[in-house]
Image (cartoon, rainbow, N blue to C red):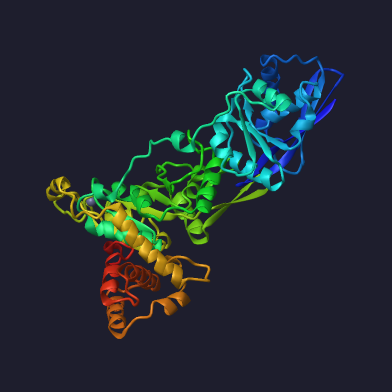
Length: 511
Ligand SMILES: [Zn+2]
């Protein structure tokens, strides 16, 4: 007896529909599987056999052949357990096959016949919809994810038995009717720049950085609030559009990181990998290729705390994705390209001990400091348009926490960001760039015209500080964003002076 059902397989961030075919017949009892399968998929054999028995279905001794087609796509993951089990039951007459042709089936089986969630449900259901499939039988724990896709009937199931009952009778017990608003977890802490007293300069620099999507580095002693500052960046970024949310959710779905609620990701990502992160979890890859931190940070922030502690291969590897906004990984002869469109935020101490230039506490020699800062190579420094010193939080600033009246909060900062974003939207209308930080030399000539006074000032700075061409363009781009925040049509001398203050490299390496 032959039977087949439909399922989905991931390829990068996309999915393809595959057909799971089963043939059962007389012969020496065996269980064979073919169709370019990873070991993970082949292991389904044992799980499926035991799960079927423990769900109360009797299978006679028989020769079982499973094939997953098309054969040119490598099949990974554990989501084929359920379709394989259902196809076997169908070939044995437990299921009426007619009903499963318009349905995609995904799920991992436990030995007791219960169904576990799998990764990549969202792209699979999206692809099913494109292929004209109108139903998706998926694990209960993936329910909120599956139903993001409109016009596909999502059938959540938590056991093999329940899945069989649904296919035969069209009913599902205990179908979840959760209201998405009710079951969304509220573990997200509301964080706000109003929580940070003092550090006005760092706050303003952060606001400018977000407005023009400039990568920013915080340099300051331990306890100066660098992490607090970085963590709050998503609170002043514009809200994501639905398409952006969908793209982010898709990435988290493939990575298996949607969390307990498992539905649409509403907030911009903030990723802060630890400095001992492996290359494959940072850039993506692994046996079964998954997106890494740089992709998970997409549309949001990648924060590298204690940046000098990261391995050189991680830091240097960042340059290409920062330039191209994506990363290409080759695994087993196949190429996977993941997006890597994030704002880079770094934090580091000013020297090894952390207290330079406070010479009462810092004994580091100039050489030591240069070596320490030199852990970030010049080409990587060049990717930071802005660099801001954070100061230790003093007694005065702690005291002001009782009176937050004049402290800039996330709402007002976000408004300034939106104002500057609107100016950029108009400026780059019809072009393939969106932010001031993305301007080419030609774009800068066109959009950063300087008056006589401004020209004089920047020439003076250029000569006196021995700026490189890179340094010059960073100042100009940042000045353009400051002008946008302040509502100036043209860049002013004040905008240039302020941008110079944020130029992206510590003084000590220049001299
Ligand atoms: Zn020191």
